Amino acid sequence: MTMLCALLPLPVLPLRRDYIDIEGGENAKRAVEARALLGSVDCHFVIMLCFMSDILGKTQSLSLFLQSATIDFSVADLIHAVCADLTELRSNDDKFNALYTEAVNLCEASGIEINFSDQTALPPARKRKIPAKFAESFVSETVGDRPDTKSKEGFQKNVCFPVLDSLLT
Image 1: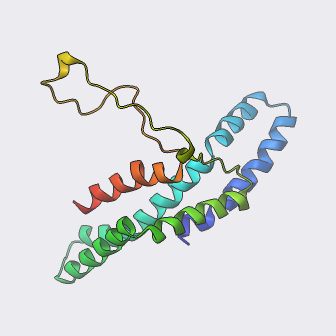
Image 2: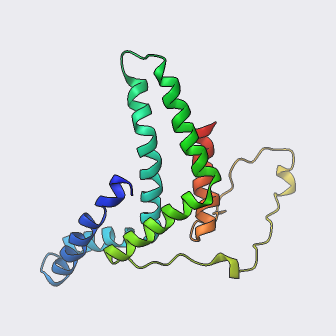
């Protein structure tokens, strides 16, 4: 379990207790702020937190080593080790499933509702066509087209893989 994810239930549980206390109290502004903060901590936030904590935990030592004033040839071994870890996370579904299970356990321990949707039951979305006037253009991103990140497979395909691919290239 990563360090950041191991500490998550500590701040989340007091936040929930404070929210309950504030909601019944007289300070309306603090209650609104607490409600907004509590609303943003959901299962999707937790899985993103676990994923990024794992990635940043693996790359932090390399980052610090590369920023040092003196660098020797041992950095090559560290680079290869970090790349091997990231490649394994990219290619091994068991590693992703372990991260997902860690996030689910963290949600259960913190009292956060787990609502990952099962996108396998939905029919595939129709393929979007680019308008004819843009046929000769390069469109890097369209407005309103949001990839699925609410399911386990969608999160892996549309968040994890692109992040890992950008780190490995």
